[in-house]
Image 1 (cartoon, chains in turn cyan, brown):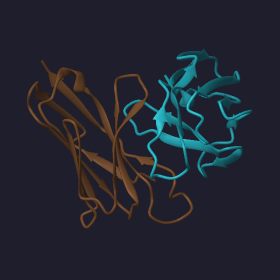
Image 2: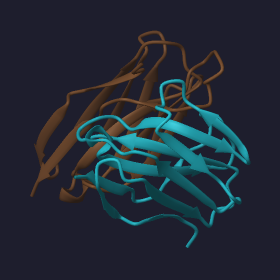
Image 3: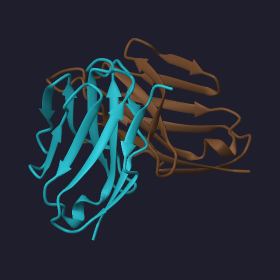
Image 4: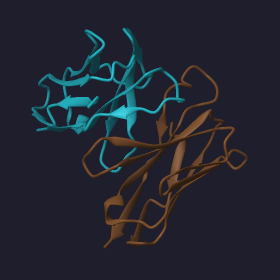
Length: 114
Length: 114
């Protein structure tokens, strides 16, 4: 089945220790998104890629970076995680950029910062 | 800034009853989408309704959109325990450079008791 896969599902890192979350898709979608979702809150868009074009949301901290080496894979790098970065990180894809397409979400990676 | 706001924040019903959730938004939109999120999982797309549509159905789901009131409702008929989840509305913006991005509300937490 075509899908969005996120690894790992649970990640524990130490305060200040860099961490990378990964996302892969078999849908061959052009657009990939990273969202941050804190407990009982709305998913918040961090950035998205349209093909190889990177688009950062204005209020995404510099501590968060992303890489998309090819169509299938996208990585979220948190350079120096703080306690406030503990959250669920959701990867999503869509065929085209624009709210007229549904987004396909992975199961998420829950990040704990100790 | 948050665009959509769901109401109520939490809803508890018995199996077989209908569940109605509402979403209000602030600015003009092109499309409005509803998503479901089971606890600790990713989001699953339910329905997309365009700004020129007033009502849409999908199985036991019925979505209405009133652009004059900037509001939408999601009705789940004959609810089941498996419908227990959080439900989010998401809107794009009808203007500006971020019109492709979805902005999620905080969600309604639905609990269906067997």
